[in-house]
Image 1 (tube, rainbow, N blue to C red):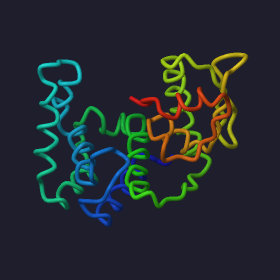
Image 2: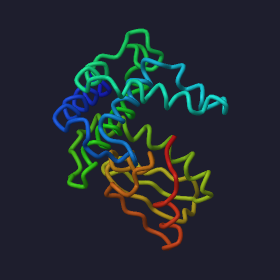
Image 3: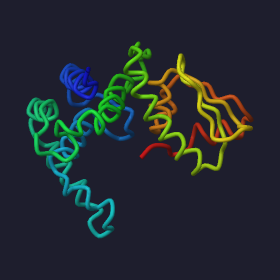
Length: 208
């Protein structure tokens, strides 16, 4: 079985090297160097996440990330390409579950960062993998927004959170993954419904 987390990681590492450290990404305010440092810190410094739950430590994670970003760029990408076996989020037991979506999203963050992009053809197996994540993400996002919707991924079965949905959201599985991970402005996704609801969905802070 193909480990798509590994595939996307290698593609991302290759693209980061070819783009260089100062290329734009979809992550506002972050260059490719910043994004690479974020991924490496997530996998190698789990202590950096403490600021997410302990407010007095809110700046700690960013200091850790900036210190990692100061490494030579090639060394930073080498660390991204080969995560530690002990990592709670990238060891072989959890890698496909924890990182397929993560690496796909960040690969596209770099691919689409300059605004010159076309969607990739991902294949049925990868589409199905991403669609499984989309169904979970979209359910939580729509509940938070108080919007009912039918969501249809190309070639896959639709899901809905109401018998009478207010909007219909359609697109390829990869585009929907990016959409519900907060990259709405850089996707090809159709939202059918009232203009007000479409605006709310397209401008909401989605994702984790």
